Image: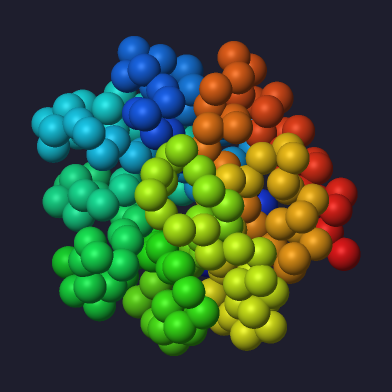
Length: 218
């Protein structure tokens, strides 16, 4: 399956955030995200050093080196993403210019971008051929991104009405209590962090959240 098709077919994008997962439990949590049906999984290790982040990536890498494995994404570390053959990269608005990132990464690697407004979403969508997907959020206030002003559900509908050429994901405060609202607002794909990482059975949490989201889609 081509990466564009795999991303388009993905409903749930998982994030391995070291703010919620002890490094010693990273491999098992990653395995559970895969078992839950995640089509993309991102390693987000903001507080770790470059060396520590590379060690975490190396530890979970075998889980992605199999047929039909999810797409592996590194958060905001272009050097690490470049050095791992099967790794893609996710960047924020202030991290790296997408065109420059694509130039460094080459054509084959997956590249995603966070957006926080309609203007940013439109700009991201115009970069088809540079970006492979973009994310919209945070929809709600979330401890994962403290201090970030929520964009609200209205933006979801506005982005949907754009009929984006790129796959797009909704992120930020998506959980069992909000999944139906997000679906009804027009979301096509979701990302959740704490709601699935905190439970002991992460695979079951991913499946439950995915089912709740899909059941509420118009």
